[in-house]
Length: 272
Image (tube, rainbow, N blue to C red; front, top):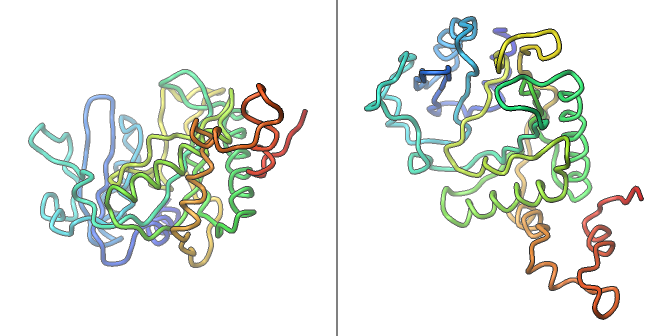
């Protein structure tokens, strides 16, 4: 576990920056702020062995370093109502575009091996499609139940950046979600927490057909390349909303939106 954690911390967290670790249970939240990897790893290891902890997460984006003084290099168990966690206003800079691909299943349970595999395959499909439009290699992760793609970005934490990220996720959801797998569109807020790879995901009971799994990094570039603002805007603009539909050519008068033309334009293959 320690090696997996070290790899995750080295890839996800900017050196010398403050991050929050947050662990969730059915009834409580445990949280701490960390300024270095050693203290973080020491604090997370016992949490990961606690079977009441459903998942352990970290903040992805750069935050106000003053937050370290809330719980400096330690985890406080069972936060009270007066104990604050990281909010959107605390984020100084956006560093990641987080894409969460999850298999559709009943709430409160882990995925089956088949469902898990569908999410991993969908992540590969999305990454290949984005690569065809010039996106760099992402960090590909296994959340334990689904799949993750993380693209390095460099945006301020402001309303235009929020709209860009929100638009990118909405476009990917419209293009790739289906009746078995979905792209989560809720991950656009700047203070979003993300699975800390190397830790276990526990949803429901650990059963033979729906086991608890350890999250992990599947693949990552040596140095993540930043996605340009133009590339992000181009992705967000591929959302097939009513405005975009009105701008598309029509096949013939009275037939409305030309779906085949839109699919061709966006590089989506047609099976039948």
